[in-house]
Length: 348
Image (cartoon, one colour):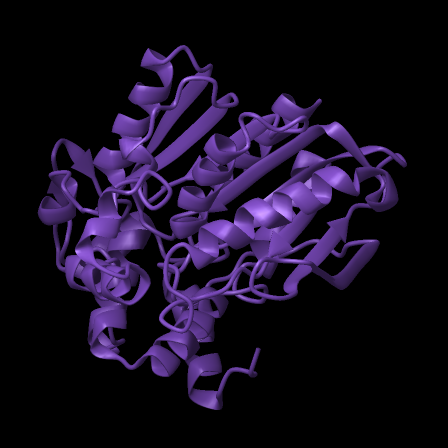
């Protein structure tokens, strides 16, 4: 990751200072009254943060080239990144994949035994942006708080590699870990998959694709997952402007990832269209001000209707991407810990 510029470092310092003000001042500085949609009330810090982004004229992904958007993702995930614990063991590796080596980063907390539980983490970013660095703090926190090895997977990105490249890499990475569990110091019976946004999509795809494998995920943690790439749910429109992730940006991501609109109905692109019976137990987390809220909730309901053990939680005052900004948002950090706790219980 390139270091932040002086201007971006100043923005990060100023944003954290302003977001530490009392809630009443946050609302006043953000426009004077709370924001409500669909019975949800936006967190005052989030409201102020979004107002600051507008004042700083931070661009949306769809207004940028692919390379500019990738840099913007790095900046976004650094400005308010959570403080991450120091790991005893972090190393880079590569797994064999269908399109060549898949870079991974392996985090192992100090207290784990030789045969530890593990989680493959797939980062968000619309299948176009993001990588090992953008989600490094989140992966460190998950490893520390869930008490498991975390293997972050740097799957191929679009538009250089369109669907199903990311899905193929995700499945290949899981199967590599399953086949090499002993060498990796991992308990093959306690391997979970997790991810946010596009990474939640890939976690769901791996969970479905490996149902017939000898080793399959023990658990799936889906964090505001993108499970319907046809973008048919109401919150895509009702929350598609003004809450960080824009509907136009979603369209931009899909235009780069899918080979054609017809791919959007392929179950390996959109798990919403899959038969989900036999999927592993799941925890699904959404946010009240996320355009993906409705599809995440519906997918949890679909899993439950198919007999899959599932818990569903909506962080009602949050927005899409809040775990990556949990260093500056006081109510986002407990949300991340809640996700890690669900993983820890499932793998214990």
